[in-house]
Length: 287
Image (cartoon, rainbow, N blue to C red; front, side, top):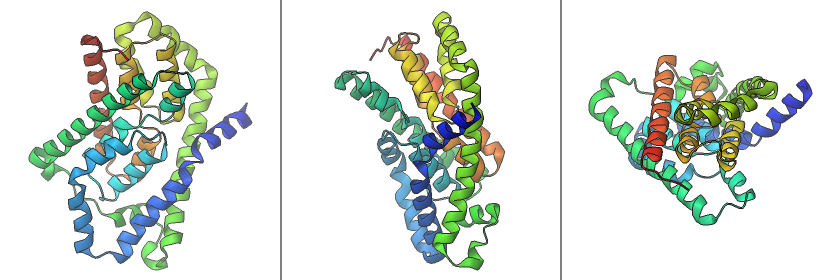
């Protein structure tokens, strides 16, 4: 059983390694070779980040949320951009809908709603922070990640080696947690969720939001299957898929400080997802 869980966790997460490595290569290059003026230009261009983040997030690849968390931790993108990617990404939802022969028009509606919510809320987060909370959000810099991981990037002067060190540490953290989560699911967590969701339609929205927080591709699989099998409403499905950010939350806690800020980010991630889910059910929106 342990071997099965380890292999499953490895298969779930190994695909993010190349994107993590590329992400850290970019960040290391910016840290070691870009001037302060150039770095400022990157941050300035990021004001439209929530739009591009919301659009790119729909691509079914866990690595985008992981890259977004790393970029945010390094001060390259805004919190709103990162959250837009978190809300937009759906991990395995799209492949499952396609394999279940769901009409293209229906899939398009689901993706469009996710992107719309992600973009609007991403811009809202950035607006609120810039208007009211800027003084309470400490500036972030790429070298903060290096100091935190003790990778001695400044001594090595090697973009590739420093990026590899960051990638190995972050992937190791993701892999360990994924094995633990797979153990919980193997012990019957999926069956308990199905029974609860079928008998508590209102609380199902909040519960699927909690499931979405599970930093594993399995959460999007469970939520999508529950919806396709008629166990949960469209709102409950959307709540879980909006909150679900794949391994992005894991990477955020691994790379970003302070931890209190990460908890607040997760709170906003969950609150928006659940509120959107309730609104969809109240308006009677179906897919």
